[in-house]
Length: 158
Image 1 (cartoon, rainbow, N blue to C red):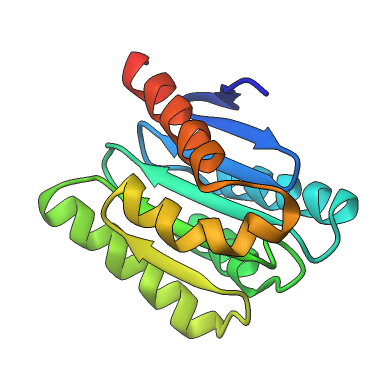
Image 2 (cartoon, rainbow, N blue to C red; image 1 turned 180 degrees about the horizontal axis):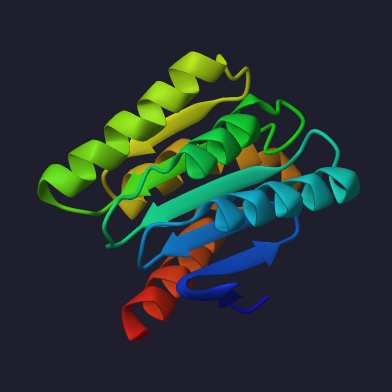
């Protein structure tokens, strides 16, 4: 499966079987989050109770509008998407990275998501956390690592 643009220049997405990997060059908007949720529902239809998500934030300026917050809360509260887990890789340095970590942590706390979620600082941490969750669906740690690295490569090109 190839990495393709995700709605616009802000990000990319790779969907392979039951795993979706999002990569961000800039902060997503409410429309991006709504599309993320739609993709999650599509994966859930094809792979019931076996969806997983890796979310990679490379750079950007966080913008937490009310619409974006509502869309994010709706996605996080939906226990029927990405049931195996979602891992958020925040590569954004400094205060911006701290703000994104705090936002994601707050959303997960407020929505009381029943699906496993984790916020990490590196791709290696994300793969280490996610690989055991997706292994029963045929993913190896090496294949997941490669898929994440391809998304990173696409992000860095843009």
